[in-house]
Each structure stands twice: as C-alpha cells, then as structure tokens.
Length: 160
Image (tube, rainbow, N blue to C red):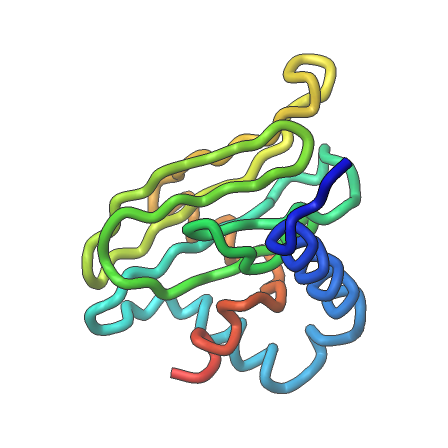
C-alpha cells in the first residue's frame, strides 16, 4: 500500500489530537475559558461559527477525525464538540472513518451552524457515519450538554 505525505501528516495529526484529548486538557484553564466562550454562542463579526458535535453514545468509543475544507481540524469523541470560526461561504465537512461522510454547508456572516456527526446503528448502515445539519435551538441544547474537544480551531475560539 502506498501512503502519500499528506495522508501520513493527516493521520499523524489525528493521532496527536486524540492523544492530547485523552489527557486532562479539559481541566486546563484555557480549555474551560474556550468552552465557556463557545457555549455563549456569540457571533464573531464578519465570521460564521460552525459547531460540529457528536452527542450520541450508541457509537463505538473511538474518536473520529474531522476535516474542514480538506484540512484535519481534530477528532470528535462521544459527547463532545468542536467549534470553528470561518469566513462566510461554502465549507465542506468530512470524516474519513468507516465510509467517508461529507456535508457541504453554505454559511453567512454572523451565522451559527450546528452539525451533528452521527454513527447510526452499524447493522443498518454498515458502519457509515453521517453529518446532519440541525436546527439552531436543537444544536444549542445538544452543545450545552457536551464537552469541548481541543482542535485546530480551539486557538481561534479561545483567543479572539
């Protein structure tokens, strides 16, 4: 099997994020502040906020690598979320675990977008993950009950 440099780098990033997330990072002050800010749902001027979450616990316990516009941004564990502030426009969210899942999302300035990463019953779907955009109030309720995962987006959320 031939592996490209990009594939190897992507997998290394997934493994690093997964290892870091397994540590006590959620207890670090900057992560607590980032989570508090993310859960305020404040719109960033001139940007869109995409909340990616995995709320269900019926899926296996391994983490799923999440890609935004082709770049690895982190991993979602059961009962966790990532939030990314992005410029308005078209964005592709993807996961390459099991069978590839993709969602194209059109965002507007100041908009909040909620996307659930679901892992339906393996017997019905053959281990296929899906992304589903959810209604704003449903997404906010779900995110309030979840923990923020460290990601390539964490610095943006916590720092500006």
